[in-house]
Image (tube, rainbow, N blue to C red; front, side, top):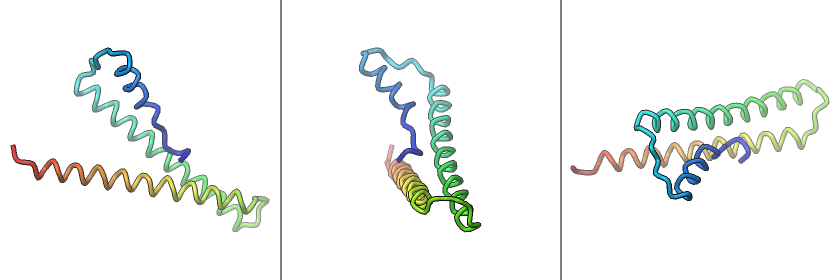
Length: 102
């Protein structure tokens, strides 16, 4: 799953390991989460585009290895499936929170 990066989360774990408190405001936390989400989705999109480009080159008869096309296609498929599973879990968590009584 080369297309998905978890580097932003490692910063949070480093802070927690060092025993320091996280001093982010809710606004900063929202911006950080949004930027991590956007970066991850952009990487998934890049993987999809790379797979499409290799497939197009293969169909047009250009000099492309078949195994490279198949590997790129599988990477794109796996990253998309992982993204959809994460989305499903987020939606499920949101629905569960909305069902909670206060």
